[in-house]
Image 1 (cartoon, rainbow, N blue to C red):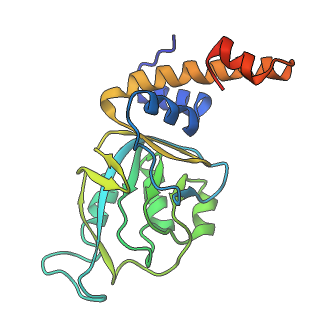
Image 2: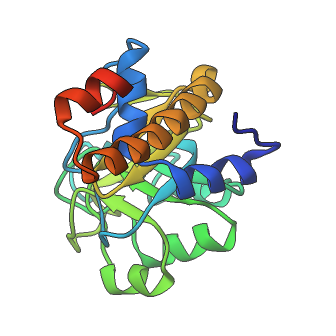
Image 3: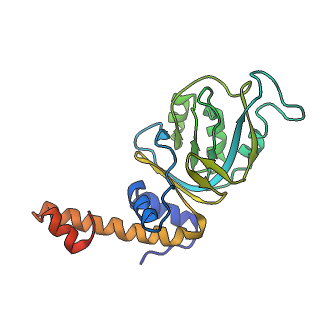
Length: 226
């Protein structure tokens, strides 16, 4: 049985031992069928892994391009949300439009300085080379330089958000790799991680048996994993 004392140990264990597929399988077994964010959300470099707690950010389009909102600064409350990030948190942006980037190099520089675990957005990023140079986990729908300043704004943060079919509450666990980004509700995180670790360990045993000549049918019959 695996154990952890704090988030540092939990997220280190998850990055080392788990992957999105095995976490998703366990969530399916628990009846939580809509925990993957849209498949278009991908790491900007294939080996990137992101793991931490959701610091949720709600993004909305401006009513008219270039039109400010009375009483709100440029970007809405984006800078407040950015500066409010804590260690092991992920800047998780709902996105609003595919027509402008919602995260760039300077934002990621600030996130890294605060000890954040990465950023995940339902929209484009920009400054790809700069973010890659930071070696900071960044997941987005693609690269696009057009700026959000005259087009969108952050209207709230640390609030519940929905991305695709997935509901995310502040503090939920976020795990992402090359094959997707999955959300683990905070209320079930311990059970999901333990069961995912057991399944991942079992898959290694099954893989060894198949490489030694066992059939897929026999492997599934014996171990219940394939």
